[in-house]
Length: 326
Image (cartoon, rainbow, N blue to C red):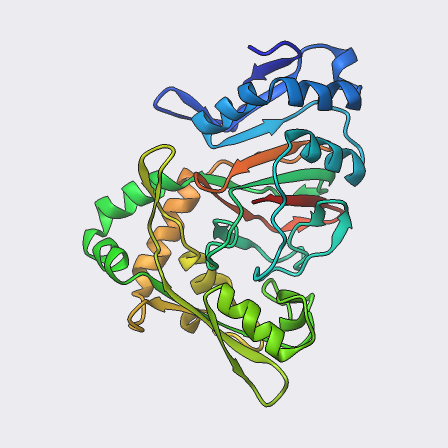
């Protein structure tokens, strides 16, 4: 055990092969819990220990440290020393708060955000992501997490033919974007903020780098087509297959006045997905997930190669911030 940090157990954790998911780390002493500089120093010194927990468990929750602001969170993220990934090509409406810190998906409180690997629908996605609870929810608003290889194993067991098709053809994602952001939609990011430009030619260049084709629409919006891209990847570090796709998220959640979720994702050859199998996958995700109620000051570090995450609906206030790692 690294000095200053102590592993604790909380009721929501699940046990897989004797390993707690997620790993939960707290301060060893009250002095340590209230000192930001001591925490950032300890992260730098014991980064190897924290990374070993992340490798073993896929997710690490830092709980009980007195972190109050976005700026405190930014200092914690910086202490890990990872390279930042700019948020280009993602679907969620979000705003830069300070440094490397953004709001998490700003879609309305009554909407659930389905399980997904962060930016699984674009070629350059983060390897890790941090979440921080600045204002804990009045109720609900958890960020459930689930181990991707477990989802793959259960899907292969229950729907072997479907998984075989998925491994053969991959998936194609289709999303219609307006010109500007629509904060009332969970996928409401307009094309200008998706590609960080007002220039259609630059948008096309950036889209091409993300493996997207663009079809411009008469109302100033655009249809984006991504893929076919693999739906199953190999987590090389852990030598296991993972359910690395946004199939359930797109099929059950990419819905607003421009988008019909059933058409938002297909097999890579354009064939429609069987709805019953997609919804069974959703059930598996729910069954295997862990939802820990947020406490103010919590920092959750996720390995995006190991874990899918989602968001439950909530009663405001709630403010959860995020930071993405290359």
